[in-house]
Image (spheres, rainbow, N blue to C red):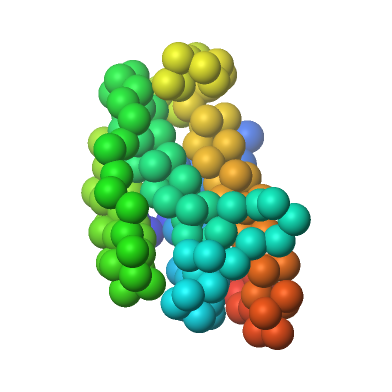
Amino acid sequence: MASSASPSSAPAGLVLTPDQLLQHWQAHRRVTRRMIVAFPEDALFTHAVGGMRPFAQLVMEFVRMAVPIARGVATGRWEDAEVAEPRTKEALLARWDAETAALDAVWPTIPPHRFQEHDVAFGQWAGPGYVTILYAIDNEIHHRGQGYVYLRSLGIEPPAFWDRS
């Protein structure tokens, strides 16, 4: 993972550096990974509450978003990911880990101006690159909340959401 800039090296008015934004996203991804681990294998793929999708399907939504969004912000080309659906927890975790490494690899290729440049992601989400990235992070956090409900309904204590180590 890229290192963060020291506070004195950031330009005045800058809230986050690109590396700090990636670290924030990857910290959330670590929590999501712990959520995957916490699920019993069968429940990961089948358990749902109130007509919502099982957590494995939500995780695959995150997979279909993260790297394609980073690539899109980097290049301006918005290509959907063709992703085979894993059938086991082990395969899902392997895919998650591969996507985490891919996100780390793509991130440094994003030119700094692309974070502020207006684009239309996947032909439907208009805004600057950083907004599209924040959407992916927000989407993961939102759906991870569903996973917390699922785990609690199964009598399993979910991982602490604030522990992003």
